[in-house]
Length: 319
Image (spheres, rainbow, N blue to C red):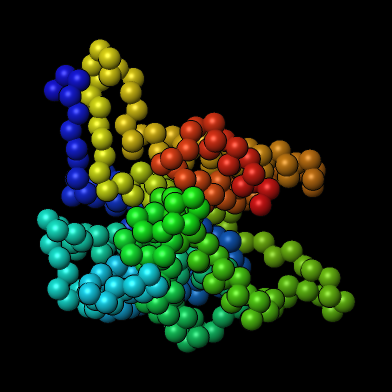
């Protein structure tokens, strides 16, 4: 092949890059289970399973259509076709079933982030409805705004931000911000966990019951982020090493490096920052810092330079 280049299309990606994204929910479940008290571990695992099974049906019936349903009545706010995957075009002309699976993994990730935010304070029946609403309506509508060709924030149709639109390559805003805001409102409405404050209103630290699960879940999520970020390419230009092309980065490899740099920087800044502020090292804080760095770089991982990933990770550690 020499110095030639070739294009690898979406159907080549699932075995190598997209399967980690489908496992993201399991690894997030592991992280959340280790972060709560032992008596609530089974409940948090149940909510994550519910996210997957309920999210599958709600995203199938309504969600995919609201997110990517284009047609004669398409508009910048919400999709209007492909309900229950009816008349979805073939891969030769647009979307296909693997794209649905790809986006479903995003939808249940949003719900999983929210379940971790409101852990230990939610009735299961209420969460069941909440999860269905998130994956079937809330995430799809925001995804339509940014990732649909007709969305009002889409780089393909928006004149915002000097004509560039909103660049969210793999979901910093569409996935993680949506899940975080939903969790924030859920926490605000439900109030603090039982036992969080003493009789005088002084906060009582509540530590998770299994730090091993948290650390293991963090490392597995690190691997899963290579499904989130590099796996979000529609097409990948691969330069084969030869003479003048020797050492060239592929688009996927570059994005993976940038993702790693941001997470690692956030982790080490958190490590020393917590040491200076509270006087001791804490593995759980470092895990949170690493994940925060990944979240921060997810939107721009395909367009920024490696040095910018380090800067992004530094500021993410303090957020």
